[in-house]
Image (cartoon, rainbow, N blue to C red; front, side):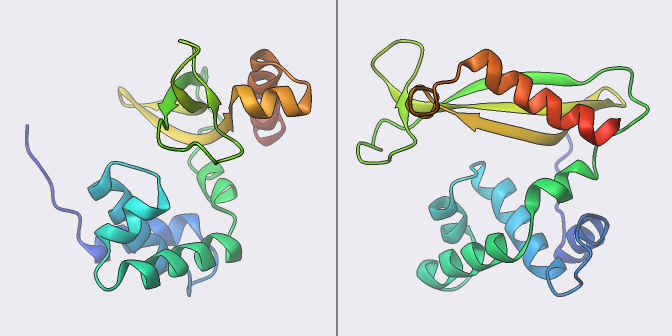
Length: 163
């Protein structure tokens, strides 16, 4: 397998397509590179991967998320001409998150964590993620919903997007 190194310049070219505000493009590129390096979406993991102080990086990421709408940026990756949409629910274990309100228990009934439903479009034999929904047994119980309703919500967003 050939490993390619994505430079910040190449990543910025990609993020220019996703974000309209040119001031957000360099930050988005740094954050995306950190996600790939950390292999994790957790802000604390990303802040460790960026150069500089992790506390300052964490605040920069939080400010970026407050100023942008990442989900709308992801929607730009959807292919309206694709014959189908892929959906994959994944359990994300968070055993150390004892005080985190949105974390519930996973299928085994003991491990703490939440589900991430990723929606993707097929492209040249790959799945390109363009939307997601997170939920847990805790959030489902609080909202009086079900996993099926969460999946319908995600697919409903796609139907609104695609038309």
